[in-house]
Image (cartoon, rainbow, N blue to C red; front, side, top):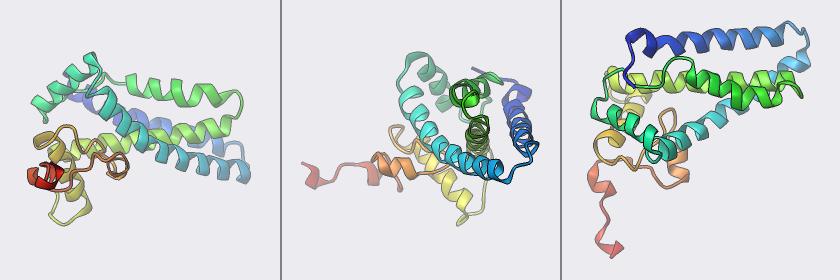
Length: 189
């Protein structure tokens, strides 16, 4: 779905505010144990986000009809402001990662959700940077941009990770070089 500039950037600010809010809720409890638990669950949420990001991009955006159509529009116009309406992804994050745990362990729910939101913010920033910025060659951001560009312009069935290529390596979908690296070798028969 095509978004306005405000709609495109809204989740950046919403996520940042929610991260501060969730951290504040835990800090108000004035317990080092709860704060440490929040840190652990935030790290777990951030790590979990990388798998969620990979799975959504690979199996939802490239397979499920409505989402595939929207994602195809992004592939057709990579620099256009195309994406989910503001707050939709944030609401899903809270419904999936916060709500089920909030009544049983509030601090863990806050931490897990904070980590997921940090990952989602990193994803939004990295994806935007991959299309809009020109980082200096040899930098980490340049490598991440190149990784994503190979997905867009060489082999759409590879390089689904945006914030990390880890899951592409785990699931065998990593393409690190140009099109020749993806072509089957003569030994493959």
